[in-house]
Picture 1: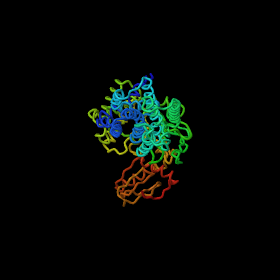
Picture 2 (picture 1 turned 90 degrees about the vertical axis):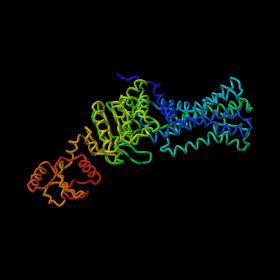
Picture 3 (picture 1 turned 135 degrees about the vertical axis):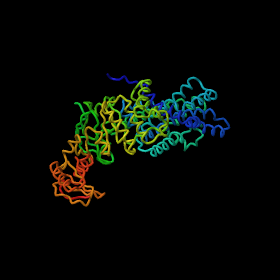
Picture 4 (picture 1 turned 45 degrees about the vertical axis):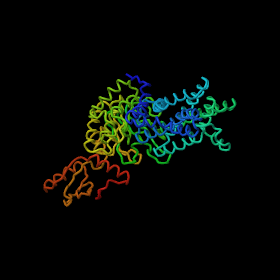
Length: 249
Length: 309
């Protein structure tokens, strides 16, 4: 008789291994994951005398979504190359999609403590409309899907954890250092601003900052921002679906 | 079709390295099948292809009628693997390791816990089930990985060099587990420990440079070599009787005579008459492997000349 397999169990396995057991058995990870989004936020808060607190909180929320994918890339590379876990999962009834969904949720679980505090801070310090809040949420969701797809694809290409650090470094520079996430884009002098527009995070930040009223962007620009963000996300998801190496060629 | 069937499987990696060259193989899917070969012979590549982790460049294969290329989803319901160089995740306990693997296989949580506990007890890890993997010995970590596949419902199990690096006692423990497991499942084992294959396997295949050299039971493999009997003389100064066969001088000074059954019988009688100490027996898998692989590498004609090893 064929066994009834539970997708919920398969998703839970990834969450347990990549988040819950890690935090349970290494509590120091819980402290680190809790503190990491606040380091830059504190710097921005002090440097701006508190004027950029709202933008900073919004930036930390967007960045935590971007960092999920970067972090997942490192986690999956380690589990795949050093533990051979992915080989065991490939030769099992779990599909690539279920594995990635579980791992993506595990990254959210991992950042749940920080996201909770950031969420409380956002309610306290970001004053926006319901539509604005919806826009910020959608931007975060898109950045999450984008970075997870990118992270998973890159993890299947790295053959060594050292290589995965290089991937993380490059992606991190492109997605989190160049874009003006913790401050308005107008703080970047004009010729250099165009460099920031090379990163999709810049469009996400611009939409979120406009939704919360921290910058005033013409409606047409917001539409373009959405088109770029959705387009790039779809493109990355498409490339990831085509190029990810689940069963090697 | 029942059994494991490979038809002209070839694999060329993107780097240009050819790992498998048109390999064809047919074995029954029961008991233990051991694939032996030197490092880089193509064992792991074949396992990864059969376990649906990698596509072959050409050729096809099926296990119990399930095509590995066209029906990977169906096959993955039936197989489980402990890959070569797999490591028990250090920050998990053995219980968490086996339990999460069973969840990945789709088990309901309660059933997964029950099976995980039982499998860990079966491999003698019951007392260590809640200790973190990083504090276990190498042998125990291997047992944890084997427990994952034992606990699963998979009826086809791939173990890629499961005993590499283990001490003799841990190896022997693992052998006992496999001997028990083979009664219910089909185990595809790769190893370069020939004694392991000889002790455990019901059938054996030898690969060299991506090609199948020979396959069959140990008796069938013995039948493929020119001289299936071995006489070992411990005293290297003994005058070797005239014999139709091959005389090999060992590094320890011993002399080994490889010969046929009738010759072995008459030489033995002669040695007994002279009061010479010797050991007579059929060729071990070691001898068969050296004979067949060396023949393949060197194009050796199995001649009667003396040689050193």
